[in-house]
Amino acid sequence: MITNNFPPKYKLNINENCNKCKRCAKECSFDVFTFDETENNIVAYNKNCVACRRCVLTCPQNAIELSENKIAFNSHFNWDYKTQNDIHKQSDTGAKLLTSVGTGLSHKNIFDHLLLDACQVTNPSIDPLREPMELRTFVGRKSDNISDEIGPQLQLETPIVFAAMSFGALSLNVHKALGNAARKAGTCMNCGEGGLHPDMVEYGPNTFVQVASGRFGIDKEYLESGAAIEIKIGQGAKPGIGGHLPGEKIDKEISKTRMIPEGSDAISPAPHHDIYSIEDLENLIYLLKEVTEYKKPVGVKISAVHNAPAIATGIVRAGADFVAVDGLKGGTGATPATIRDNVGIPIELAISSIDKRLREEKIRHKASIIASGGIRSSADILKIIALGADCASIGTAALIALGCTVCESCHTNKCAWGIATQKPELTKRLDPEEGGERVYNLLRSWSLEMKELLGSLGITSIESLKGNRERLRALDLDSYTMETLGVKGAGR
Ligand code: SF4
Ligand code: SF4
Image 1: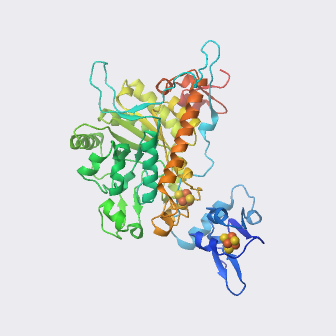
Image 2: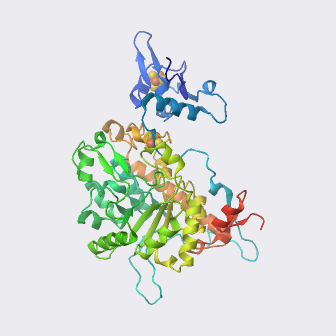
Image 3: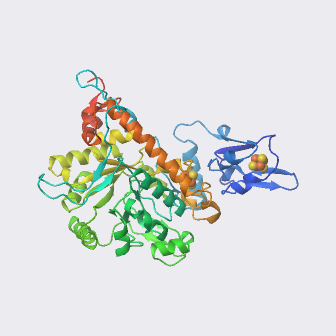
């Protein structure tokens, strides 16, 4: 019987420029290239190729051409390449399909159907080169009355933080690069649920430390070293399930940071085993506040699902200083593909609904909202703030700045760019200083663009855009979606 006869998705062609230096065989971490001594040439095993493009970009002779294997694709709309190939893989192994990054399915991207509305004449636009534009954002609980003392606030110089990505999912050099960028830009990274490596403690004032269901790496020192504490309940790429870092990734450094034995699996259960109600969550929030003497914001991260507004209300009433919400398109280092692609709701709908619900209950000021899940540009950030967020959190965009080519192979521990891997021969490919500069440049560029966009909206401060849906218009969205967003159609 012929099994898995499905053709490879990508095709590599080595052209006549090749001088047989064998560099591609060294650079490729997916074992695509071998040198055939008999034929005296490089041979490419196309089936292993994930299109990470490392070989194309490092070949000194520009001799490698990478293309989609178009001839092999049947054009059937329902039974496309991916669907058929997934069935083949599952028939081969009987195992769940694992993947990484955010969903690549063509769910409607609401950001692309929202337009920012400019001002003219009666409410004139503002020139950001002549007028000061305020991007500074504060994360934390505000008081009910101006005379009351406010809770601890985290000051961000731009409304962008880095999403929670653990040491384990990512290399230590990536954490250092994000720490360098966050420090220089006056914002924060998030160490995720893997604990804080001793080398990262110096970045503590620019770090959210996370308390997740596995409780890895948590002690008083860890909690005190961060600028804010985030309790992770859910993640956009995998709502309702936990995490699993396989034992082969738990080397000496990760074992030290996570406080678990080397080589043992790091399993994060789906729920926190001590949280089954808002009251339980309140206990944990106040435990963390007590331990850190009420000196830093303590918040809760949830995934965007249909009852997120009710859950967010409970979280705010339980004393959280911020609610982080991660949408359907959020990224991950590893998850079952079926969960990533089919569970959750878009961040645009979740944020708007949460903001409206908190305003209706007159508690919107009691917590900041951090939005993540598929945010790709400065315009996406302003749109999500206009829908009710205080600031945005970015993960994949920061990794792309570091060289990620979105090959969806983070879960294999073979990342050719040294990002989502612990293999020393790969992690050394990423320089934390140079990488930090690239990510900082991205933040700087987006901040300049946000000032330009705010000026065109006739607004001088990011705070004035928060929940200001009047500055948005919908194009090609159905009436139900527009009502949920609270946005008028373009032309009205
Ligand atoms: S890196 Fe380029 S030049 Fe060197 S062997 Fe590979 S294809 Fe040929
Ligand atoms: S981090 Fe590495 S493995 Fe993951 S998608 Fe990006 S390039 Fe691929």
